[in-house]
Length: 308
Ligand code: PZK
Image 1 (cartoon, rainbow, N blue to C red):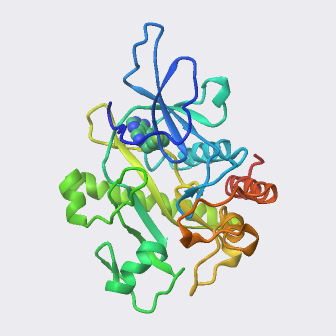
Image 2 (cartoon, rainbow, N blue to C red):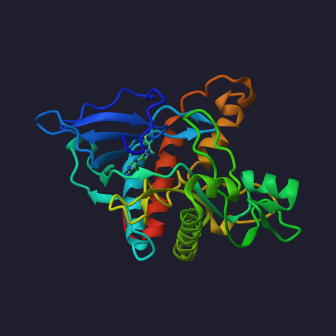
């Protein structure tokens, strides 16, 4: 099944899509395989469906965020175009079943590389922890005095393992990545991931959004050339930390472009939720759902300069 693992149960009932069978569900996206009238699976294609599900603090929220899947799908498609001179991508067509129209893409089925390709342009999260402990991130020595939210001199490649859903990805050393992919593919993955984040910030920062870091997935071109192909989603608020540029103030955690209303409400007395309780969070009230939907749309419109 070329790059698709099936270790985890879907968090929702898979859709009944005519001409497709369900393959796998992640937290917020689902994969289907096209089948012909004989019931034969097309080995070269997958249907990638973006749901309206949202996670925060490692919990899935209810209810869903209307239009989220369509916004992120259109944003990824726009970025694939913006990046097409840097790297080929897996997109084949947006001609998909009506029930998922606008939030699904037919893609080339690739042999996926078993490394999460992450680059960081600003220091926060796991990168900040590693810097505080060692003064370096993924083996790259950094200047002294950096704080939460500091801009890095240049983007750093900070790859991780791909853990199954529910488990956390672990940092990989350059030697581990080279052992997994070979020296040449490892170097190409690092170069491309950093170039994608540089291009992303050249475009987004002019429009009021900083992209602190991003996670991309690559597959190998099925022609056997060994070339890398950009897959999955790219430079979306789900795969990247988007920060409002006008609120950027290094020295403390930055507000999240898309999830801040959800986080603020969940940690406010109004929600009645204790994050440390281990209990599921309560349902989001309508105003939080609507504000969050508007932030996703605003991110799309700002980055692309086009109305959603
Ligand atoms: C692939 N994922 C992650 C994404 C999920 C899981 N073009 C491709 N070829 C082969 N495999 C994949 C892709 C892509 N993209 C992507 N896992 C496998 C993923 C969305 C939903 F459930």
